[in-house]
Length: 83
Image (cartoon, rainbow, N blue to C red; front, side):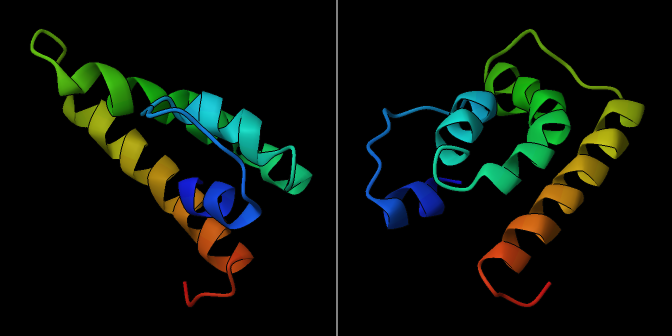
């Protein structure tokens, strides 16, 4: 998402918040709004797990990998990259 924001010349602050980044991206790529469920699910892992005290279970990890793969597939396709 940061690559798309850079490409569009949209300023964003230093952040790991996937939902905030998605809100910005959808101003130039409204179709990316379909990623909202994945970004909402992945956001805790982008932020909370960076610090001690938050653990993910094996089931959490499997769900996160699934969401990440779906988002990656969509974004790579949007950039015309191989999936």
